Image (cartoon, rainbow over all chains, first blue to last red):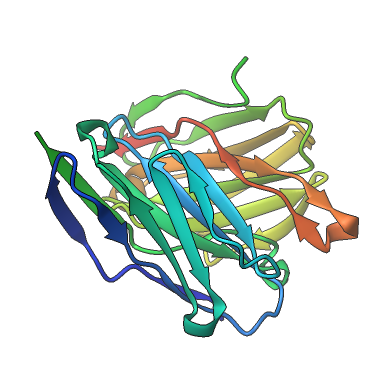
Length: 115
Length: 117
């Protein structure tokens, strides 16, 4: 069975602070996919990044960066110099072929960035 | 140029009624999904269709019936609505590759907020 744990339920930071959202996953499949999605107050689910299990390269996209470590089964997400517009719920998710590639979501981390 | 669209966006109805939510994707994907997001924001898979065939059917009551008339559409019909069905329902689509050995990103529709009174 697959499981995704986002231990941080809520995080509150002041604008311009850096913040890291943690994600730990469990799976016995050797091929799997990891995702981060953002859900702003308007409610839509916005895709941020996808990582394949065979690609451990970390990624940076503007103020966003992701650290994928298979040794610790973690896929953490860092926002540098946070902005008020980053306020949202962030979901980490895992998919595997045996589950028809359905996304298995963590419970989400609610990030509040205040001015 | 909406990639994944859902109608309606909001649905308010009485207990016991039957309702449908429609989903369409214009991305040319072969796999579509329905997810339910409850009041605590927890997202859970309900159904998945690949090339109009049911792939995933999680422990969802029989009152929920998905229908896929073609690869671009996956509709959700709900019979005898109950209070506990109130939630946000998201449709998503993705493309499998390599004969199903690989998959691409799932893109989501805007969601349908269902309120059962």
